[in-house]
Length: 240
Image (cartoon, rainbow, N blue to C red; front, side):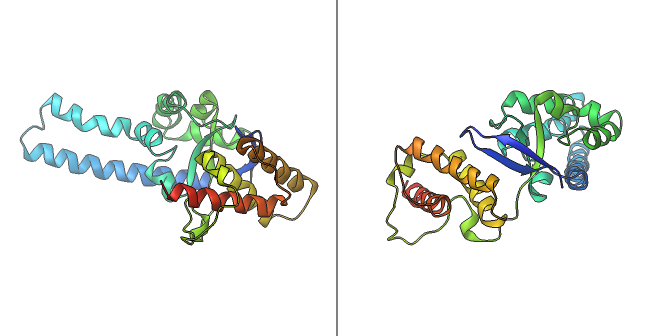
């Protein structure tokens, strides 16, 4: 299982699991099956309208097919339908949120990675590069991560809390979704991995980053502190 260490915007280093080749292939197959079904349905509709010989009509049919991956990754936070089903997501190696430019570079190189070589170039590139990157990822500074399985309601970003929940840190309202997502990743690491100097430092760094952003100081240990902040954020965001 390959991992990549990414320095988040909160200046906290998080280890993400790099998506395996098998998962990426299955996600791509799902996407291309959906696209094939779309093309068949669209061509049948065009034919039924007697426009099968119309260049304009066929061009309109082709546009969604050609833009599918670009549009999905831009509007679905780095996920196509296949990636979403396999819990995969495009991330930047520098920890920042991928931009439209990053997604555009991945899309522009897709014909070389996958189209011209029937996926062979992408397969080889993913296997030989350190972070499992195809050419589009190398150009864009991205890779594809495997998201952890979420099994409890409390694992979602906006967990359902008791209506009479009293925030320990009202300042948590000033945090952002990425701040809380990072806190959740760190909390998951602290509660599922064995204790070590690395996990201790990770917890302390995340706690210090949140304390600085919220303008607070707490005597709580990292695990209860992160739980309190996440619960408070969920409660306060739920009021909006």
